[in-house]
Length: 174
Image (cartoon, rainbow, N blue to C red; front, side, top):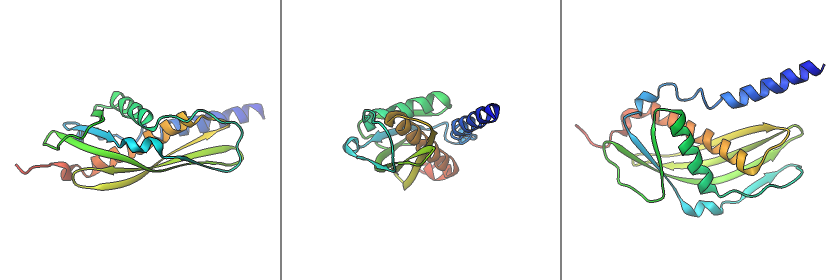
């Protein structure tokens, strides 16, 4: 029985850690563009909504710093030229500015797990896209780690969307 429980825990960890890695398989479609993410500063004050019974409390992270770390980490994990910047830049053939804001952050606990959903709004020169990044953890977790994982998941989903819509992201006609 112990081995079975250990196997189940290992299986859940593998599944939850591998989900975001599988998303960007064709990153060469957006590889030649510099994507600049501008996080709206007033989003540092978006509250974390908690649902369900839980024990303990961890320090509330700064949303902009967590978001910046996700962009840096995704850039290191992929061949993409991703930059976090605090000021707006104008679009060009080689630069796509993306303004990101948070709609809401929810952290819901159940008996054996907790799910954090972060609703992100991405505004590009051509589209406004709302994506919900999600992270499920088992047993325990901190606000910062769960927020990081859910934002990272949302950013991967957004980049996958951009990859699939790449033909629309050419700003000027040739």
